[in-house]
Image (cartoon, rainbow, N blue to C red; front, side):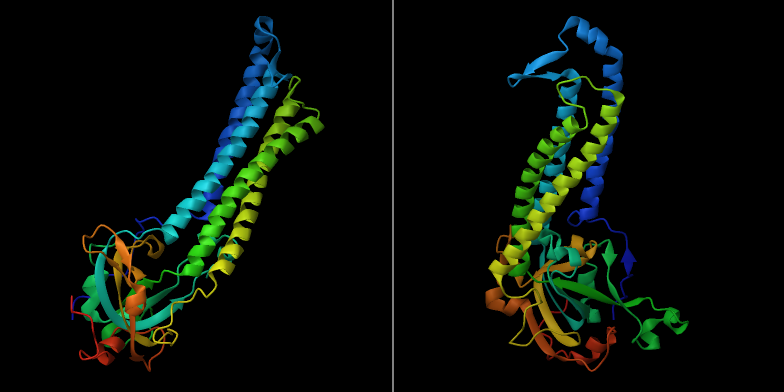
Amino acid sequence: MPPRPACGGTQTVSAAPTLLAVLMGIWAVAAAIIAGIMGVAGFLEKFAPAIAAGVSWTVTWLGGSISLAGAAALALIIAVAIATAVLIIVWAWQSYSALCGSPPVGKFECISGVINAITPGFSAWYSQAVGFAGNQPRIDVVVKSNYWPIITLNNPPFVWCARCTNCPPAAAGGATIAGGSPGCSPELSCYYHNKQVCSAALGAAIGATVGAVIGAGLAVVGAVAAMSAAGCAITGPFVLFCWIILAIILIVVIIVVVAVALIGAAIGTQAGKAAAGGSATPPAVAGAALAAGAYVTVVGNLVQAGPSMGANAIWFAGWIPNANGASVDDATLSNGNGTTVLGMSLGMVPFCFTDPDTNILASMDICPVP
């Protein structure tokens, strides 16, 4: 038996950006712009008289007039709206590409073990509204010990392991005997390319793009109207009160763009799900749904996957690098999603590696030994 891989590690492979990260980025941009506003206000307050002595306080703009302070305010409003919309659009399409784009070329691998857990697509509540922030369905397989070299291939920064709860003392080690529950049994996550997940993600990305553009336009028009309603029309001089109002309005502009973009994403998500039909669970094999405790063999494209914190994972099951190794082909129609069910375990979750070691006999195992 090879040495058991050390479980845990540090994430070094990034997954798709999260909603929280994007919102923090938007607020960071807003904070920088608001700080700039105060600088502009101070500049105009100090130098406006000198500027006014050399040029007219107002300039012709689209057939009307606009003050220098008003021009600065309008430019800031438009800049914040556009920056927010662009960040959301980039987030949407980067997330869609990470979730459903062409897989990176990895290595064709085959593993056998017992399913320890199943995660359907849309497992996070927010993915029902923001489809491109969803997840592909997956199974977590506690692999036979002779496949551990695959789990540690190319030194991934992280290794997933099942807890030692149901391991015999000899396999679990001293920590479990002392009452702890460290990870004892290395797992490999196997992801399945799901049409409903990808259709919802595409719809959400399109919806977010349209929503961000519409939201930016509405936000700019509303912001200008709000400035006028507050007595800070862009055709007149600004006082300090107007700059404070502008800072508040810019925050509202961000909220409006984000809200309209998320509404568009939610509409696109549901439209994509309806168009694709089906379900977002791991595919049935030979007519039977996969379940925890099933002994399986899985083949596919092995990569260090961001959604698995950089751990080795099969992305996607049934997909294999093509003949020249330049891309990955979807062969799921001909290979049963790369998954074969070998039987069912009588054990309990969390499974110990000793279970598949004992019960998946060499005569049953169709994978070559690494």
